[in-house]
Picture 1: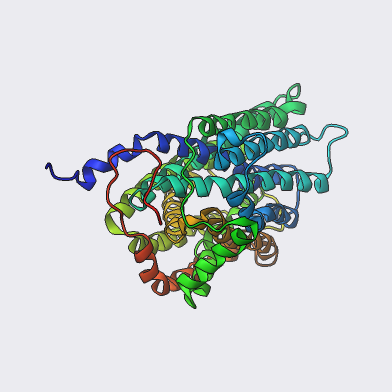
Picture 2 (picture 1 turned 30 degrees about the horizontal axis):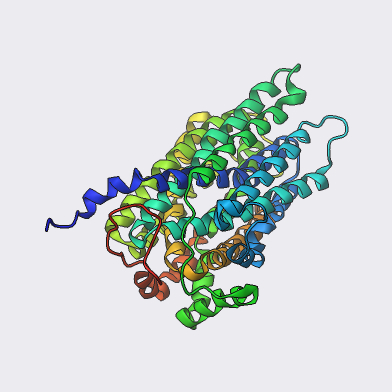
Length: 460
């Protein structure tokens, strides 16, 4: 009998499987609503003259990402009437993707300030609808990813999925800002600049629909609870029985590990536009296009490091890099005396922005890959959607609250002190890694190689 293939021989084959292509498209489709909420809408609001407090309030429109665990059991248990032929997971994916498409078209129509456009309260509401649909897509997409992958594929699957989300920022986010900036400079086209840019971005999410249609429905794992009531209780019972008192440490880790990124993501647009004087087109090319291109490199590098060094060691390394990457924004704020009290009258050199964005994006890609792989490793296949939704809801609570808090921090402290605090914010999350290390190693242990990509797996 020939020897089993080595890890080095198996790794390239993993990235060429159809399941990885499907995950790439699902990552892209899931990344677009998040890109709208996290980067495009704050940049648009800053350019439209919203205050830092109002921009910070945009983070609260992302509340559905924090609450998605409330309806996650429904996606674990119930199908979509009329779409049973797609299967439970793919039917939910399709419905949520169509809802995102419609919400984005509605937002696009109201972002150019034409007569009859919605006021900020209406924009908050529409963004909330988009995020609600995007959160549902995340619930099902995360469960789908965990259910079609074997534990040894988690690193590769996480890097591919994260790459898809980053492509949404490169091709979608950067493209939207560039198109809006170019059209906005032409007085004849300006009334339709954002409608065109966001409408095209909405159409790009059809890639996710294609991925949903060509993907295969994963087998329903044995041992799942029967009835909706059972599906509500089982995921939490499994977590409590498996983690015990360390469950509190797990939740704190999910809440705090990405705190440096969560604090700064809501305020980077205000710093770059109002504090440093960059225009939206420059931000589109440097922050969105160059930055997120390098974040894809970071995600792939993160998957490569995870396969060789293990999850626990990488969480330490990625946490340090996450904190260090914020030093660049601190240096920009200090060097060009950015202040929240006055809007920049001269533009900082574009050459100063490029290395800051490059380092931050490369590190961010690695952090995202490691964090996704960590959460995949601790979910039980009998309750994937609900457990993963619970963990990402805890993460989203931290993101939402820190995004809201960041507006007040910048208003009170100014840009430079705020970014100094964001570097120190890495300490609490990293301090929890030793408490989780043994559990992470147990859940992330590799399984024997599979000879085919059938989507089937051993019974739990």
